[in-house]
Length: 270
Ligand SMILES: Nc1ncnc2c1ncn2[C@@H]1O[C@H](COP(=O)(O)OP(=O)(O)OP(=O)(O)O)[C@@H](O)[C@H]1O
Image (tube, rainbow, N blue to C red; front, side, top):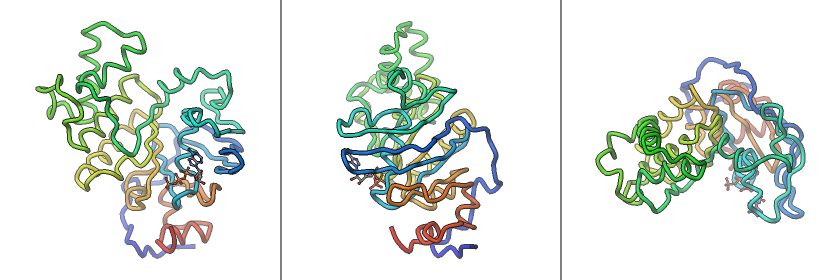
């Protein structure tokens, strides 16, 4: 099935099909909120040092699924998971997993920028201090490195002691990404990171993610088909809690196997 793109997704940044090793393997994973079976029998790989986009209409389970990858759903009393998410030979879903350590390796950035109501430098340094790092030079060096990684250093280097809440929304979101990088994660999960931002700030985040994927494995939830087409190497289409189709972004957007995938990416529903 070759899709005629009604919404004019014509260019793919990641135009070559990619084949990177699998870092995380999701096997027959089910997620429930009480009796609501929100994510059903999902099997999919997450390839290292690439961007995987999760797409699908509202309520299809994207956020539920991404939150499970670093056990954020543990914070929701009615949530329950079954299955296996293999990461370096460990099942992330196992009750034996140290979730604090897991979240240092698999960081998360949310839809609304949520800096701590502290100074810009403290936003980077608090997680480090929490992890037991107190050497002042190390704290300063990591702050500078992380702010440079997200392209924020030049904009804030003269006001590191001022409140992070005084930054623009786009700057706050880059600060949140810098904060996630401070603990040197392997994986960064982003749940609609640009949906609250203006187009210029969104474009900066997209550029940043394309840079970061050289060193990090990135999973992003997005409602924006153009964004998925521009930045994702792999795309997973969810519908009604099921993973309908997974593939390279180019293949999924140009030759989807399932009609519902084609209908969704062409804007016929959702
Ligand atoms: N905290 C929660 N408690 C109970 N049910 C929830 C909770 N979060 C999500 N759900 C339910 O799980 C299902 C999947 O929702 P989820 O938010 O994961 O979908 P989504 O695809 O991310 O939607 P959206 O694009 O609107 O954010 C829905 O039926 C939703 O009502």
